[in-house]
Structure formats: C-alpha cells, structure tokens
Image (cartoon, rainbow, N blue to C red; front, side, top):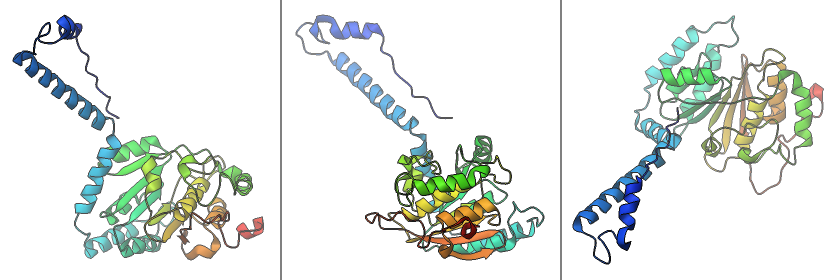
Length: 319
C-alpha cells in the first residue's frame, strides 16, 4: 500500500497572532525572544513534515535503493550452493507438466547467470515454479518479475519481502497472433520500431506501463515464461517477446548482447513471435522447450526499421 501524504493545518489563531500590529513582537517592535523560539520551532516542524512527506510519497525510490544496497552487500553465492539449488530444482521438475522446466533447461539459463562478469540484471516475465530459484541464483544481481496477476504478485511480495515484481494488463490474445504480426509490420517505421523508448510507444504489442526505471535498466538476460498462452483467449507471449526484442536493441549501456530465453518455444505464438522479433539468426540453441537467443544492441543514431537481417517473408518461414 502506498503511504498517504500527510498535511499540517495551521489553526486560525496562529494567523491572527502573526498579523497583529504588523509584526510578531508587536507594533514596530523587535520580535520577542520567546516568539523567535516559537518561529524556529514552527519552521523546523514544517521542514520535517515536508521532508517526511517527500520520502513517504516515493516508496519505490526508497525500496529500490535498499534492495540494490542489500544485493550489492550480499556475499557471492558459493558454487556448491548454486549447484545444489539447480540440482534439487531439476530433480523435482515434472516431465509431464511442460510449465515446469527440465534440468537441462534450468542449466541453460543458470549458465548465463553464472557467466555474468558483473552482477546480472535479469528480467523475468511470468511467475512460475522457478521464481524463487531465479531470485536465489541471481542474489548478487537485480531480478525483476512481471506477471499478469496482481493477486499473485502481492502474495509473492508478502511471503518474500525484497522481491521486485510488477503486474501488467496484457491486451493481446493468442487468437489474434497473425493479425497482430501484420499490424506490427505496418507500424515498423512508426510505433513498432525495433529501437525506441517503450515508455512513449503506442504500439499495440509494446508493454509500456511498467515503472519508468525498468526501461532504463541494461538487462543482461530476459526470460519469457509468461503470461498464459495455452488457449485462444489467453494473452499469450507476443507482447513480452516484442518488448524483450526492443529492450535488447535499445540499450544505451551495459553489455552489447542480451540473452533472451523463450520457454515453451514449441508453441505457435512463441515460435512465430520469436522468429519475427528475436530473429532466427540470433537463435544460439534450443534445449527441450527452451529457445535461447542472443540479441545485440543497436546504434540509436542509425535508422534501421528491421528487427532481423533477413526478416521472415512468409507465414511458412515463421512457422
């Protein structure tokens, strides 16, 4: 819950006292020492109230700063602990439930986190069985979760203080996949450009209602494991994949390359969207149901309106 700004109301008698005789100390006289002390006390209280109100109305800045400080001061995760977390997560995965990752899929993502030369910035779309695992493996970095359910986000934060997570209202549908792909092509030079500030984008595929700071982070890795995409009216992952492609290409700092993982890559929406916005030439491996892309950032001063060097030219190529 966001704190409410508090206001201080001055009683009318104070105004009367201040206005009597044209000065605080009486007509034409110097302020009485008692009045000077009273004024000093009042000004101190007002200053304190203003400062307190300022900080209580900026809960994110305060929370983010404390989380970043805590992450920076955390000791490195020992390799045996890192490996043990992966081992037990892998052995408890259910091969009959594709929403849970296999041991090989988990290791593919973990290897990227392990290789980060600096603490990793990891952006995860979807709350899954592996949510706490990603937070733990990247304990020295920044891990941000995005999900379609405000309820699940609040429960996650309630049970795990310190986790950074946000809910998003997705407006796309799985059944609209090909229509939205065609729309994005028609807007490639305008709202759906591969390099842009998503905060100001009007593209139907763009996720532009996250907190401002999310768009300023140089993400090292982006995992797309949500939202739901297994029935026609589900939002699907088209918007998440498009947004990941733009974030990777629009970076102005950090590593030149961004690792983008798409889970359940065997489904039509994930496969077609990935080929369109992450590009088949950037696909470095497929492990189980996980597609691993490496996308390079681009020069902002060069007008390039194509996501891929060789864009898919037909439905047959995207499928």
